[in-house]
Image (cartoon, rainbow, N blue to C red):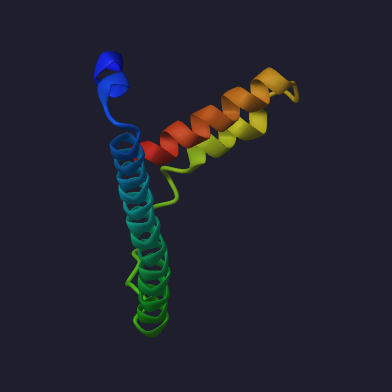
Length: 99
């Protein structure tokens, strides 16, 4: 590859480097513009969904409180050490993910 570049005339090498630079800038600019459009489209859709949620609240069924009681009793009876608090938080998160 290096021998191919050294055998090229200087003007042709400069022209190819310039064309490569132009293509790189155009490609990166295209990606940047697409990402900016994507960000604003996501924000717009988020606002639309938030307005729909405000106008039409979803029907939520009251979850039985019996399922939450074992976790809360474990948290309440846990000692005040850091390890116990971490274990209680993990147990609460695990129980919430199962329900």
